[in-house]
Length: 246
Image (cartoon, rainbow, N blue to C red; front, side, top):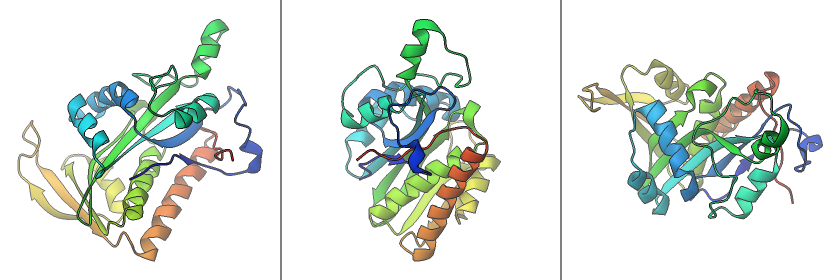
């Protein structure tokens, strides 16, 4: 079970978790908690057409066979640290129902309130079925796509499956979803079959499959893709990355 957040550390100079700089938001990958579900449902509707229901996310959250991750951003480090310290509490720094424009200027009392909000950028889920990681959900906020956030989140999800001892991964993806197919193929997924009229609108689904999650080569690849995503975000100056305080 994925049980600890991932912070992305690139230099000791970014360790000041009390900084309230508005220049760039912080980024973290966290386990989903119950208070996140309304925001996740909103993202699910925008990206997947409402594929999952509240009860579906709740059921997976309660299962020890599921890993649910959220990719989040915050204008200050403190709300993420508070979220980690009190993950089950429905406090003011839970995820917004829709990610705001992070570049928008903040003024007056709105500035202080916004500093302590966490914005949802993406969600991912896998089921552990025997030795298989069945990826059920991977979605990135539409306005935030094209920044390698999907690559980052998929790397984290597969690493969590690897941590469970799972040996292979599979999923279904729309035949028309070229962007998703390209991402999964980059991670060595192959088309293993097709499910006719799998989706409610009648579209077929490709069944994707990859093995070797426990191989050293797989670990190196996932680590490389994660670092590549971080490097891209740093180069484009989209987010700050920081280390968990000790």
